[in-house]
Amino acid sequence: MVDQKIQIKHLDFYYGKFQALKEVNLSIPEREITAIIGPSGCGKSTLLRCLNRMNDLVSGAKVEGEVLIDGEDIYQPSTDLVRLRKKVGMVFQRPNPFPISIFDNIAYGPSIHRFAAKKELPGIVEKSLEAVGLWDALKGRLSEHALALSGEQQQRLCIARLLAVEADILLMDEPCSALDPIATERIEELMRKLQKNYTIVIVTHNMQQAARVSSRVAYFYLGELIEFGSTQRIFTTPLRQETEDYITGRFG
Ligand SMILES: Nc1ncnc2c1ncn2[C@@H]1O[C@H](COP(=O)(O)OP(=O)(O)OP(=O)(O)O)[C@@H](O)[C@H]1O
Ligand SMILES: [Mg+2]
Image (cartoon, rainbow, N blue to C red; front, side, top):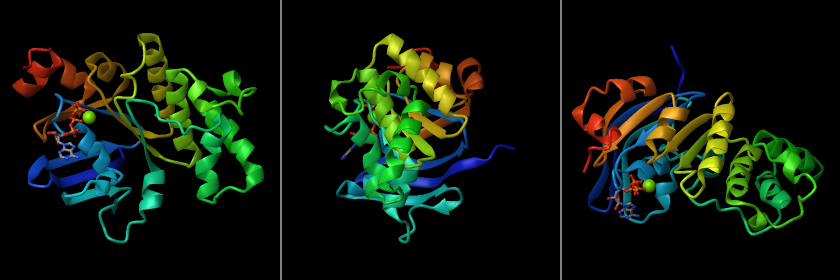
């Protein structure tokens, strides 16, 4: 029996009167890659943002239901949001490093959260860059501006930033859509390596990518979870016609 890292129960989500997620029930296993797929506007990004309460920042947003992470409902009023967002980190379509040095990009989190003393920062920077495969390339360039890096390196840096604050869930919203195919392949390789220690939820429009990296796939349509299962099964014998139409490109 796999451990469920995230349990989403009867989740409804509204932007004002518009219901963007409807009665979603989904359990996301620990230390695996789960892919969220579905046509544009079906609620994939909304769902990711429900997992670290980023939607709280949207005015008029309303959430009903439960999201348990490690068994704890993150929508309880007592949830420490800073701690939650550290634990459940997010990377976006466009890499968004801070406009400061490579070193400071990584050191910023651990120092503002005050869990690291100044003298520990170089070690944290090295370990985080090493984990995303950037250390050898960047160890002599740590004081350079992060925005001078390639798109792929910026995306890796953004992942390293999450590891530096000891995230254990990585939410990735179309993390490769601004990258070329070779960079995409290398980021996928990184994801496969990271899943040994992290729980990863990736949103992707790329069916090949979902098939290559994930072990489970959730197909959404108009805010509803239509089908969830092992990647192998979803791509070979989907149970629902809608899923089959979407993954074979017959949709729409
Ligand atoms: N801040 C917002 N205010 C109002 N409606 C929103 C907001 N953000 C998203 N929506 C709506 O909620 C629905 C789901 O949006 P969401 O961005 O989650 O979809 P998505 O599956 O991530 O789409 P895409 O594949 O294009 O990124 C859409 O109808 C969208 O227009
Ligand atoms: Mg989206």
